[in-house]
Image 1 (tube, helix red, strand yellow):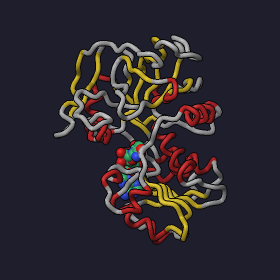
Image 2: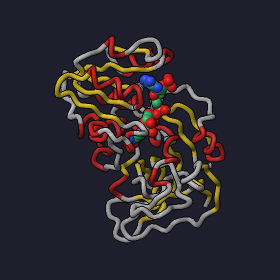
Image 3: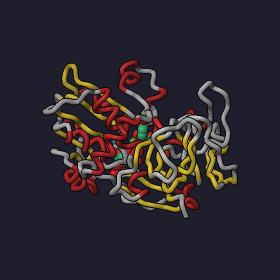
Length: 308
Ligand SMILES: NC(=O)c1ccc[n+]([C@@H]2O[C@H](COP(=O)([O-])OP(=O)(O)OC[C@H]3O[C@@H](n4cnc5c(N)ncnc54)[C@H](OP(=O)(O)O)[C@@H]3O)[C@@H](O)[C@H]2O)c1
C-alpha cells in the first residue's frame, strides 16, 4: 500500500512516500481503509515519531493520527464492529497514523462516523474536539457561568474549545487575528480580541479558565488574567519540555477516548458542534500540508484525502 512516513525524525523530519505492506490486524485490532486524515503540522517533530514507547529509535512512523474511513478487516476477537462500517477516530501517538491507504486501530480509539458528515469533515474533528474536551471538561472542569479565555480560537483546536465552552454555558473570550473576528463570534464567542492590535490582559481579568493553544509569550502573559484559583490549560507545542512546574501541570497531550468520541459524534450529528475543514489536499500533496505551504483560510483543520 501507499504510505507517507517520517524519515529521520531526529534531524529535520521530512515525509517520504513509500510502498509498504498492507498491515494485518492482530487479535483485538481493526484495519481501516482510510478515506481522509487530519493534519497536525507540528506532529512530525513530536517524540513518538522518532521513538517507541520504551525509548528506542523509531523509523518510518506514519503520521496523521486522526482519520475517517471504513472498516476493512477485523482482528480476531473484535466484537460489535463489522467490515464496511464507517468510523472516525484517533490513534495513540505511538501507533502508526493514517497517512496511508490503510491503518490499524483499536475499537477503543474509534466511533461510528457521524452520518451527516463527509469523511473529510469527520477526519477534521477527533484531535481538535478531544483536545478541547479533555482540556475544558476533564481537566478544567469548566462550569456554567464561568469565564474562559481561549487563545487561538480560529485554529483546529480553538474552534472546538469555543464551541464546547459555549455548550457548557460558559462565557467565552477568544483571541484571534483580525480576519477571524466575525468567525469567532459566529462560533459563539461573547468577546473577541485581535491579538495583533490589543493586549488581552488589558481587556480581560478574573478569568476562571484559560485554554491556551498558542504557548510562548501568550502563555507567559496569561497567568495574570486568571482569578485566584483559576485553572490554566495549555496544549501548545513546547509545553512538553517546559521546566516551570506550573506550566508542566497546565500542559497535557490529548489521548484517544471512545466514550468522548461517541459523545462528540452525537453532538456533531445533532448540529450542536460544527466541523471546520480549512482546506483539503490529496495524499500526493501531504508533504506540502505538513510544510505549511498549502493555501488556507486559517479556520479549522487541514485535511488530506487518501482514497483516490
Ligand atoms: N497537546 C496536545 O494534545 C495538542 C493537540 C493538538 C494540537 N496541539 C498543539 O496546539 C497548538 C494549536 O494547534 P492547532 O491544530 O489548533 O493549530 P492551528 O490550526 O495552526 O491554529 C493555531 C491558531 O493560533 C492562532 N494564533 C497564532 N498566534 C496567536 C496569538 N499570539 N494569539 C492568539 N492566537 C494566535 C492562529 O491564528 P492566525 O493564523 O489567524 O494568526 C491559528 O488560528 C499547536 O502548537 C499544536 O501543536 C497540541
